[in-house]
Image (cartoon, rainbow, N blue to C red):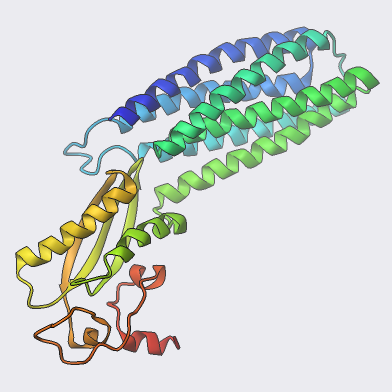
Length: 335
């Protein structure tokens, strides 16, 4: 709850700062008539809109689950990031279009010194707020806030490049530098928009996240002792900062309900420690089969039919598989 409120506070400041900096950049463009500064102002319109959308999505994601949304409202963060990525891409396209036009139709640029000062101040504030938002988003596992931060950082970097390019134009007097700089950073903005959009679609489509599965594998590996024969059919669905995990846990077939439940509780505790209580874990227990005896290291098993042969390490491949672990399956794969 505390992290949710922190996300909302930071995103609110992202919106306020975005509005102020948009006005500053428009003023700088009005004074200079520079297409490069215009590109910065156009991207700021995206900043303001996406910041407002991000604030709404974080507010909606913070609402408790209800009858219509039994898993909560966290998925809206992915939608917000998708819209933001799309808008960034549109802004990049508009910037390139206007820059190419300026290459063909030259227009005078004036008062660059004062314009560059205003844009530099705006870029500095963008960098500061973007870094705060990105780090808070990563720390609190909020894709909407992290996307806002990356967007502002991208804006700050492009502003830095813009200042360098326009300073060169101011020194050399070559007007084509203005439009050329705009095209370069228009392409950079397009790439940034694509990356944000790609990540958000991956979340919406529940694409497998190998880094996340590796994190899950560490605590599950620590459960590979005692009475747990294997974990398989592991699935992860992201709802904003909340992870919904379900899996199958194989335990000795003669365990009564309470014993099986104790093994589930033990697994849940190890996972919650790794993910700071932001996990919903749903476990289906399976009873073991005779084929599991050779890889089961339960001491003094009263129903053992085959001697323990060797341990099968739990890997992403076999934990994600819908098949129970067995030495036969390992032999078929030639391992």
